Length: 278
Image (cartoon, rainbow, N blue to C red):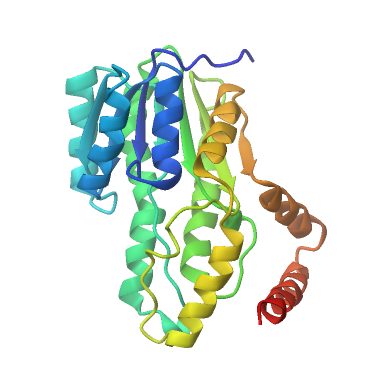
């Protein structure tokens, strides 16, 4: 299959106010894309768009909660009315939640699932008809390396990201032979604020919370711009799955070789890191 040329295509990016989403917006603009950017953070969204509009890019912004089905449907209609087309969908918006399963309330668990999994599904359902009208299109869903491995303390996040992985793989099989390609993205440790912005479970202590943040600070190191380039190169090559970062590749292989024992190895590594930090 030939390489996909992104120039001139209309791209929708959720979670575009910061992190990977903001980096994707810039990288897509640099490739000559028309952008429909969305995020719940109105101020951050406008700041990102303002920096790109200076390059005379055609950009629209929409304040959007991807946990709100009616808002998603309204956004899809807005894109149809404003842009008249959509070729690329990047389902990037997501949140994190700190705490073990019994430390997280049912309401907190459902909140994360509604954004990280159901938001992806609803965005895909809302935009797929418009994307299918084009000569070629692509849907890119951001899972996580935690859609491949499942660490303790990540029950909600792993459940959602495994769900995104399964949904996206099945969708790719269903759309095989059509004009729409599908890619699952599994980032490793990208330097975003997702961990710092995450609420903690109602039963998480201050000590547990700080320990988790310290691990995140050590792990989230790849610049978002580098991650965005890896993602877009994968989309341009129409790859079905993209792992972002050497850590993501290493953990993928660890899970593949030791599917029931990788967590013991990770625990030992985390213990050594804590001892060294102490």
